[in-house]
Image (cartoon, rainbow, N blue to C red; front, side, top):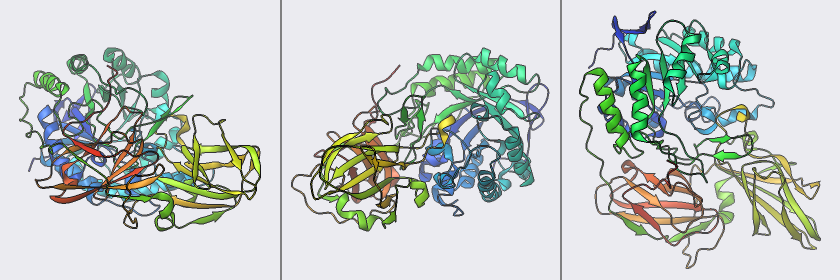
Amino acid sequence: MPDHARSLTVDATGFVRDGRPHQIISAAVHYFRVLPQQWADRLERLRALGVNTIETYVAWNVHEPEPGSYDFSGGQDVAAFVRMAGNLGLDVIVRPGPYICAEWEFGGLPGWLLAAPGIRLRCRDEPYLAAVDRWFDALIPQLLPLQCSRGGPLVAVQVENEYGSYGNDRGYLEHLRAGLLRRGLDCLLFTADGPTDAMLQGGALPPLLATATFGSRPEDSLATLRRYQPHGPLMCTEFWHGWFDHWGEPHHTRDAAEAADVLHRMLAAGASVNIYMGHGGTNFGWYNGANHDGTAYQPTVTSYDYDAPIGEAGELTAKFHLFRDVIARHTGRTPPPPPPASRRLAPRTAAPDGVAPLADHLDVLSTPVRRVATEPMERLGQSLGLIHYRTGVSGPRPEATVHIDGLGDRAQLFLDGQEIGVLHRNAPQAGLPVQVPAGGATLDVLVENQGRINYGPPLADPKGISGGVRLDNQYLFDWEIRPLPLTDLSPLTFVAAPAAARGPAFHRVPVRLNEPSADCFVALPGWTKGVVWLNGRCLGRYWDMGPQRTLYAPAPLWATGRNELVVLELHTPGTHVELRGSSDLGDESG
């Protein structure tokens, strides 16, 4: 086993590892975006890139999905991931937040935080700090035995994340720093912020090491960092050589040679670097985040390929080979060879053999609660998925308009079971015309949480309906509400349907494999919008607006013999599903 019984420190000129000058060449990979059965493969590919260090965030919300309920097993076993990297001879940097951004749901914060009325995030707000302290009490003992001072690979831990992009509460940063030390961390602590005056002033915490995050013009960015830190190492903690995608926008790519040149210039300047991302992975389930540009809400797609050197399914890209050459030239070492390419399933199509309308299964998928007014998800103990609201409307009202105040994020509305349209938070003043008959009618509202905002001032982003539903200017009261996290689909009863009807419904698609399991990509031509499960595991969301047109279905989720895809289509289903051997992430932006 590699000897990690050393420390990472800093002196006036740079990093020191095992008593010698050291340049960190790291790559980011998030254990929570990769199936644990594939951790070793992805880490071996990153080692073959030539890096000496691995960096990962810790996503609080996957470990504490409900207050006080902690999970460090299976895919949440961050300690096992760190040990695995160490066994490959790699140092590890951990960034535990509590906020991580990462284009991840709510920036890694658990949605249940928003159930506390008036909570203020990422500052010395007592309810927030109490939750953070309980979380660190659970997390930090997982990391302590992994520190390099105890023979492990963990060499450094970040305090918060790009805090200067959000706030200036230095007391909050100091609370986190002191708490990490008090709980026993003795490895190097550091901060990371964008290379601007405001960001470094708000996020740096002298005398901790300050690092920067950027994707281009390294000379300018490093010079700005040097002004705030006259001595010690220069490090780009996130070298953004690629980018992520939003629904309805082009797929982002970056010229590999140009990105490799920026990497070369940073290393030639003596700076340390963390390649973000080395391998991006996948926003499985409902965990994609979202942004808001001041005008529009922008949900992130399921894939987190990030145009990384190692693609979403482990592909070695042109960027991998160019980066590998740059690193080898600077280190003078030839990296080990990467593992062979992963197998792909042979292409095929499969058709649904059963349907389960959502409206017929509301009571087996959820327990209804009664409220006078609409409530957001968080107040009902829900973080992810869909939520359903139902009330009665008096009539006749031959010309009326339905409005939703405080919508998060996308609502389908039905009157007496017939869909009347869709409302979205990006058009808050919009309404849907409705004609209510003389005897009155039932109004149903199905709301999808499309991902909480993960960056910037609008971070507190409640889901469902936090304001109210109006018919013209009259608020509607007396609601029956059903949270639909959809974590267990076993209560569904599928029936044969010669022609699948339009509207929210689960479609069962059997797939039989007479070969060993392998990777593939699920395409849904002709389908509109929804979510896909494979053998009970949620692969993520699809949407015909693109750019992403396939969902990654990793080999460990398949079985030889019968497999079952379940597609929750919210609008119009297609006739079949395709299994492909390569991904389609959409038209490139260049």
